[in-house]
Image (cartoon, helix red, strand yellow):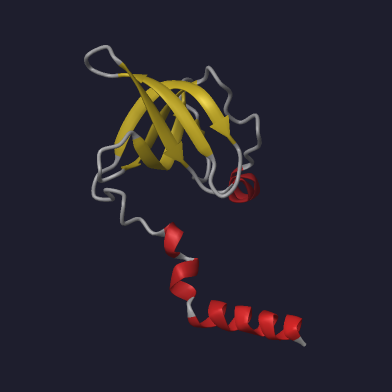
Length: 125
């Protein structure tokens, strides 16, 4: 009986508090008014949940190296709709990120599009 009561309480919490369930999908921390592009060399590609993460080494205007991170959709969404897998992007690939940078100025973006060095656009971000 205790297990059933706990199960029922959990269901009630999910039903009556949906805002917290979808909270991490908000875009309030991104500057969605501007789309920026960053070109660099892939140093890490993490095809993991909840979102695929790609890290780039980017040379800025002063010749200094910056480490940028881009966040894409989940691996299952990219696989299902874009044909992505763990080998879609490789360390050492030169790619260009297009997306929305964080408002606080960190080197982090919500990705909208990725273009490979040969001009091929990767599908369904």
